[in-house]
Length: 113
Length: 113
Image 1 (tube, chains in turn blue, brown):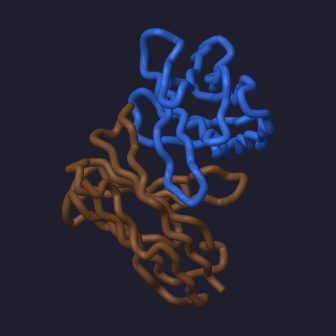
Image 2: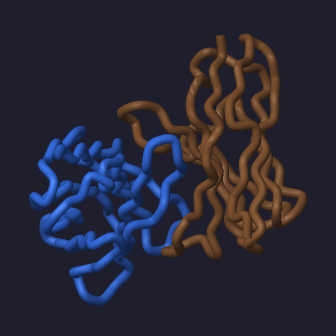
């Protein structure tokens, strides 16, 4: 079985500052990794995903994430955040040959002016 | 394309009542799933379907039933509502099972008193 740990429940940051949202996973098999974003009172939408290939993955809205197999991590980064990035961010994992997505508990990013 | 639609947006039930949450997608996706979102717990998979006529249980299936008679629709039935089922419910669909982006509906906020 897979599990996901998002190490911070809330991350406050000032506008235009860099941010990193941390995600660690546990799995006995190879996995695919995802970051989803949920804006207030909306459903989730995909930011980026890692399936294979380059370990640095670029997504929408200037976000990127790096897959580190040895540390079983998939941290999300953005060099300069905007007020509009305020949202809840979810890391998720699925086994390479399975069909169930397992989500972390979420990290609320609060961008302050 | 409307994407994934869910009805109703809000619902209040009394303990013991039954109801059906509706989900429909117009993207001809084979894979559909239901999640519940609770604070601090992320999203947990209730049931999923890999095609019309095929459904399976997720992580938290007790108290819920599903059926998939068409590709487009995937209703979730609460048989006898309990306060523990107070949650926000999301339906999602994707082109395939593994490694594909899941498209989420806007959610149904259910309160059981």
